[in-house]
Length: 94
Image 1 (cartoon, rainbow, N blue to C red):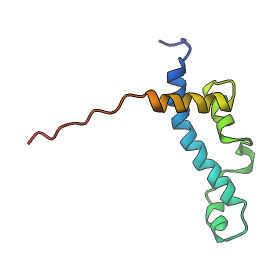
Image 2: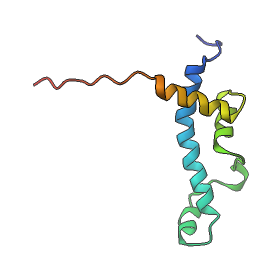
Image 3: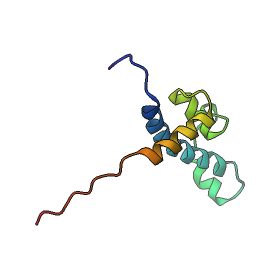
Image 4: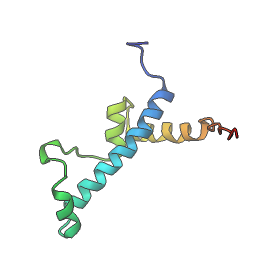
């Protein structure tokens, strides 16, 4: 399957996972700019200034995954969350 383009479902799954990661990174960036003890704790592990990505989280995710816009990515994630099949429970065999 190498070289074939992703279908929207695959993009939505990848975007959902990447959105969680980007939200955590955004929270670290927000906290690191505060002038309090929380910022001092994060400053040691913060992302270097030259690696900071600017923009809304949804737009960054859309760009990385291959959607045209952040809004399109959000829609795809919302639809995938509704359509995804429920996980099967494994019965305890004892």
